[in-house]
Image (tube, rainbow, N blue to C red; front, side, top):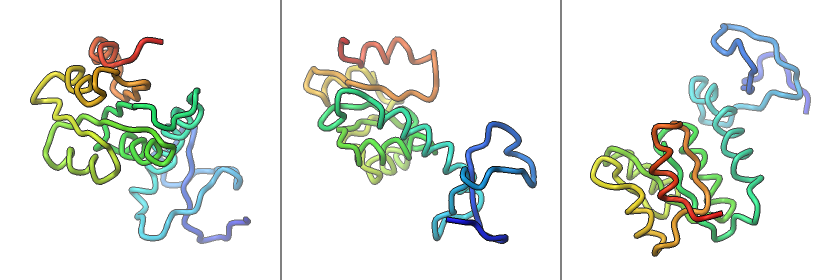
Length: 155
């Protein structure tokens, strides 16, 4: 679909995203959904592409598998919870506030874990009835590696 001058669009950029204006090939822009403001739309392509590329390409099939989504109350994590749910994952997500936990639950997390109140791997094992998570999406990095390994199924 051809875009017209004045259309509200967003795009995933390789750089320069803080500029007032930028050039993007028309094939790489996406329409901004109705009701989504420009600031939220600026985050949408990164969050959507991160979630989709990490979750839709997982093998074997995600249906019924368990996923732990860290940062579920943030932008990329919020998108990941929704994409995981759509693909058929059973999901858990840690958050550090009551609002964050409620948000993750509203987005579709089957289990929410207050990471400030206890041991996340222990809660993941309780939720999964000892089976642990099949996949972990961690946007935070190496600081959580030990806990992630303790929350992950073998192989």
